[in-house]
Structure formats: C-alpha cells, structure tokens
Image (tube, one colour):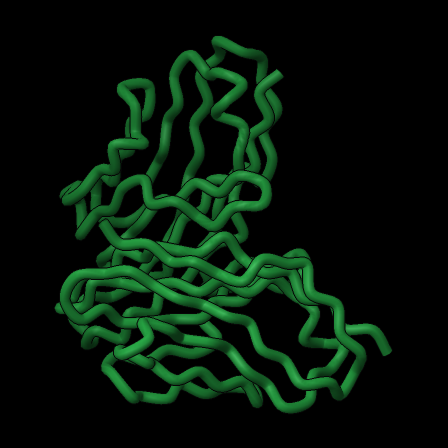
Length: 116
Length: 113
C-alpha cells in the first residue's frame, strides 16, 4: 500500500496523559500536513512541513501540541497533558510541491483520539 | 481570513435524482477551489478542482464551475447512484503554491435505491 498511513487508528486515553500519533506520507512527497476534525465539522489546519522544516503553525496549535518531521519522511504529532477538548480525528496529508500546483493533498484515514 | 460556507445536510435523495450541493467562499486573491469526498471507512480524497475563474472541474459525473462573480463553486451531478453516498467537503487554497486547505463543514449525502 503506497498511500498515507497513520498509527494508531484509534487511541483512548485519560485526561492528563500524553499521546503521540505517527504519519507516514507517500514516498517522495516533500510536504506533510496535520489537520484536526471534530464531529460535524470540516478538517481544520494545524501545521505543515516541507521536508523537515515546519513552515506554518495554526493558532489552534496550543503549547501542548508539538509536531516533528526529523528526517523529512515520517512525522509525529504529540499532545501533552490531554484534555477532553482534544478528542477529535487527527488527519495527516501529503503532497509533492515541485510537481506543479495541483493543489491535491493525499489524506490518510486518520487517528481518532478519545480523551476520557 | 479565508472561509468556506457549505450547504448543510444531511441530504437524502433517490437514485437517479439530480444533485446540487451549494458552496460559497470568502478569500483574498485568487484561490483554487476543490471538492473532496469521504466514503464510509475511507480517507478524504480529491473529487475535482478548479484553479481559476470560469474553470469547470469534473470527475465521476460530478461537475463544479468556479464562479468568481458569485464566489461560488456548487457541486452538481445529473443522476446520482447509491455508491455516491458519502460526505462531501468544499475547500479552497490560496494558490501560488500554497496548498493549505480551508474546508467547509461537509455535507452528508445518502442515496436510497
């Protein structure tokens, strides 16, 4: 399977715990995006990377959230001291900037977080 | 800032009915416009796009035309099928190589045989 893969698909945690999600983009895609989606809403942009550089972060991304892409391949999104309001689907997407501005992002199936 | 307003759902239609899902946007500059679709149990995938005014995007019998004068990008299909049941999201990007997407809230479409 050469699509975007995310792990874990579902995480249940207690309030105050830390969680980490991993995203493996499509091979050779140099841009990687994180979005958050809550029930009944569209995805909201969190952050994106070009290669290993984090180029933009949304104001939605509080200090408890950190994302990395250390080698320009996979990425991790960590949430520290989780709160019930963090419960959502976390989506990862990738694209290749240099193949023209097609504007198409390729999405994974998401990692669903439930904070009890 | 940029925003997308999408027709609220859910929408339920009979097979072979005509579909319209309305989408309007607010943006500075010259955004690119998209429709993404999420089938049950699957990730979001691009359905169609248009990158400049008067462009028409089309795919799988769906169409949408970029209307700058009305800031709209309505999705249409002449005859829907049960397999079209999904959640549809209208989205925009700022263009000029900026692929960050701003999404609408999504419209759940159910087609009954």
